Length: 296
Image 1 (cartoon, rainbow, N blue to C red):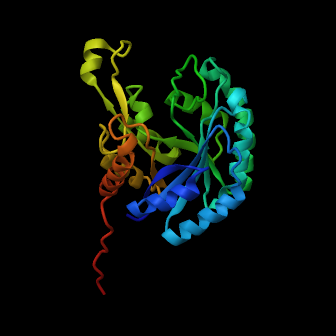
Image 2 (cartoon, rainbow, N blue to C red; image 1 turned 60 degrees about the vertical axis):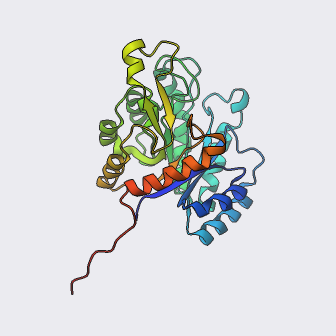
C-alpha cells in the first residue's frame, strides 16, 4: 500500500549477508541496527553495498539505529555517543533520513535528573542531524527501568516525553513508537497514539499479549508473568486501528518488524513468525493497491 512500507530490523554488521536471504519474502524496508557501538563496520563501504541492493530490490533503508546509553559512556557504552555521530554522518549514504535509539539515562536516578544531560547531548546531536538532513527518534522501551531508577532510556513514558520535548522542541526530534512497551506498563496504546501521533516518526512492528486473568488474580508483582512481547498478528493490538490513525495524520514512514522477542515464534520459527507478521500488517494497511476508476 502506498506511503506506509512494511519491513523488518536487521543487524547492521550482517545486513549485507542477511537482506538478500529474506527480501524475497516481501519486506519493503529495512532498519539497520547496532548494539552500543557500530564497532568495526565500515559504514561507507556497507552503505554502498546496501544502496545497490535497495535499488535492485526496490526496497529502502528506513533508518539506522544505535541502542546504548550515550549519556554515561560507561563500560560497554563507551562508543555509543560516537556511534550516534557516525550514523548521523552516514545516514544519507544508506539513503536513510533517520537515526534512532535510546536516549540514555543517568543510572538509577529519577528521570527528571537526566533531562539536563539529555538536553546537552541531544541538543548537539540534533544540530548535527539537521546539518545532514536527518531526523532523530527515540524508542519507547523501558529496558526494565521506571520513573525512579533504571539504565539505558528515559523515553518510555508520556510524562518523560513531555519533559524531553519541552527541553528540546526541535522539529527533527521525535519518537520511535510501538504499542508493546506501553502495554507492558498497562497503558492503552490506541488513545496514546491519537495524542502523540504527530511526534511519532518511526514505528516498530511489535505487539504484546496481556494476561488479564493473572493480573486480576495475582497483580503485577508476583512470580507469574503477566505480559509477553509478541510478533504482530499474535498479540492483542488492533493494527488496523494503528495504521488507520497513522494514515489519518499523514504518516508516510515505515513499520519495521522487531522480531526475536516472541515466546512461541522464535528460534527455528523466527522467520515463520516474521513473515506471518509481514503479511498480516500488509492486510491491516488495506492489502494491494487498487486503482480508482477514471472518468473522463
